[in-house]
Length: 287
Image (cartoon, rainbow, N blue to C red; front, side, top):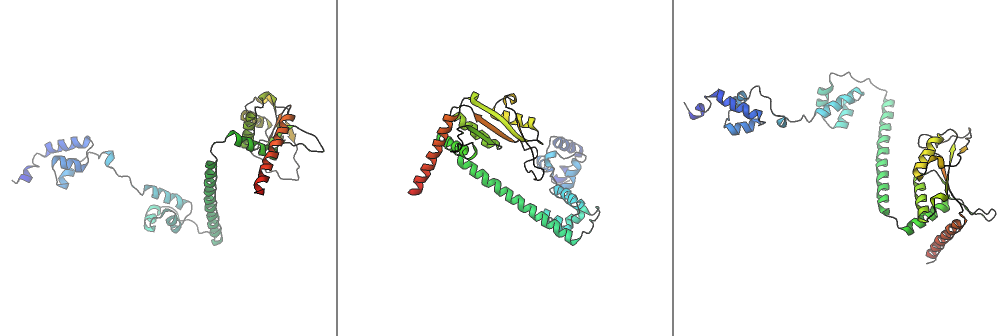
């Protein structure tokens, strides 16, 4: 008897050792090297009935592709369309979906419209991604605001959106109206910079009759940090039925009116700051 044959005579003893190693989580290759059993058939006989450890099982890379191909087929896609989206061969697609019903033939004009719509949807998605990236990059350019920068930004904002004095109607009042939450946050930060006492501020909601005024009041009250009960009486705006309103839906919360009481002196300072900004611009233009 040769030495190689004598190595396998005690099969049961060898099998017990192989099974024990298998249950420890060893792979066939590791068991082979540990027991020095290099006969492929004998090695499989030694571990017959013992499942391989989980870590040795390879995931089937095409399972996800197969599932997606079946979804697309059920949506009515052709082999060419499925191949274009998944990048796999038609033979694989045929094997995966051959038990599914064939899609009905569609009108060529309808197919063309569908293709055009999908191209446009893709284009819109690309544009939206580009738009977001541009906004994010621009936002990062701003960084922290100094007090001077906030003073200038708030002054320009007030002069664009706030109430202004007219030679024919003296109204040196500080009153601001806007519907943009970001604008309101900036305006409130500007008032804090100017050390305007909170008790000098009054708030009022202006909103269309068809909107949820109570919900809007709660929203603005939370934004500016006061109780809804602190708001003055809401101004309800009537809608002209001949026009189509676009400011509708859950995002519409009307306009917030913020007034600073005893604001004549503050108004004069605001107008002075604005004149200073314009004068500085004029000096730049002259250089």
